[in-house]
Length: 238
Image (cartoon, rainbow, N blue to C red; front, top):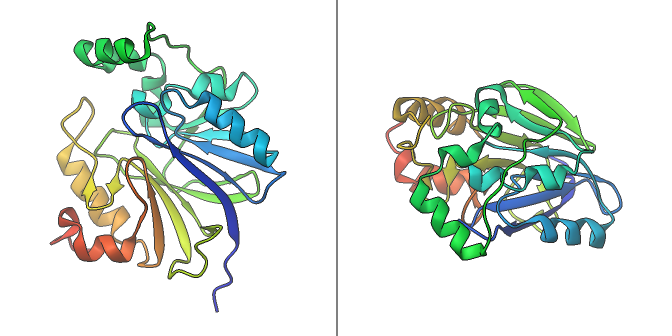
């Protein structure tokens, strides 16, 4: 019999690109991890921490694209380390340099201010299959390149509060590797279609059907649903 531990999980979209940011903790009043703090999430993260009396133990980044890391430095606030895979570490030097100028201009016009970047003070580099124990949460790093060289998913043997009645027994924060009905694009700098195919076959498909998928964009899904309906997983032998 699988005994599930429901964990406090708050997810919300960033102010641009609908990037999902997650705050996860064993319970209110404890330490937490913040995953993928994108553009304009600082106030929302601060409100969540205050409401649930949480203390950040780490900021986890599924990859180094601007829309997933833009608020990492203010969220870390010089007191919390940012965790990113070694192969995407270079992206934290200046992710603004990798965004298309026209897109950057549109973003600046939308927010009415010039985009600025400051590298996090404390960065911890991750490796594939590494085990982490942060904020009382046992996490496993699944390296899944293709969208970027250092794209990872974070696997957690727990489920969010409120979904324990569903047929899920674990959770994976999939970043831009896997979405509901789709996958992350591979045509941006550092993307690799062959690497993505290998990641889908060797890292994503072996995940149990009862895995809840919390993606970097869009709604949550399950591996059972994606295995049966996601066109990018069809025809890939596990």
